[in-house]
Amino acid sequence: MSEKTHVGLKWVMRAGYGSRGVIYTIIGGLALLAAFKSTQASGTKDALAALRDEPYGVPALFAIGIGLLAYLVWRVTAGVKDVEDQGTDPKGLIARIGQITTGLIHGGIGVSVLALALSGKNSGGDSTEDWTQKLMSMPMGRYIVAAIALILLGAGVYYAYKGWSGKYKGHLARTQFTESIDPVLTIGLVVYGIMMALVAGSLGYAALTANPEQAGGLGEALQSLRGMAFGRFLLGGAGLGLIGFAVYNFVEAGYRVVPKFSDPDIRTLMD
Image (tube, rainbow, N blue to C red; front, side, top):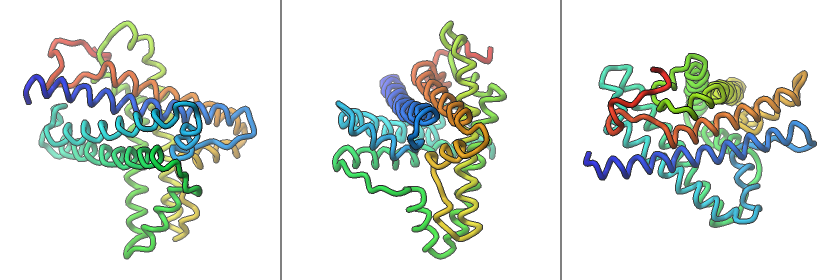
């Protein structure tokens, strides 16, 4: 890649992580609000629908949608061109496939965000339940849903491990700011991993019982915390954790170290 391409890809990467940060700021903030008020915790779909009703909500949705498409470009390019030096051994190839897969998922979310901005329609219901029902109506549908649940569970475990072990520190530049904010990043990654595991559990149970109504997304996972003992505290903690994950994405946008086009002498939080 040329130097000009590197610069362009870096800004695409920043737009992508920034958009993720905005989404989880909204979801975490609404969860925190729901912990202390008689409102329901919101998942991605409802949180973005709520944003549309705010002043300048539609332009914000357009910006988020375009940013998520930028994230798609960044992750697919990173996986195909191996700009992060994952390598071609089995471990590296799995990591690169994971990059492409997460890019495609977020690209799909980006398209739905742009559709929401254009149409202003919120179809209502649980989108996770909707697509689970569609998948289950296909041949081998239960097994497809079960496989998705296992992939999400693996991703959740990975995010939690990444936060707990500090593995993420190897690709963040060391500055006074990143050093001071580091504990927030750890908590954010661990909480996000736990929430993904809860979503995976609901999908797995839906596949086991052949009942798509058991499938729930992030909003339902947050709401389930509220029904537990000390539920308001758990929900509030999850909300703060998701805001921490949003901060992690913002930090990634500004301080991510990419081997193929970052200064080779740059110090990371791992150093």
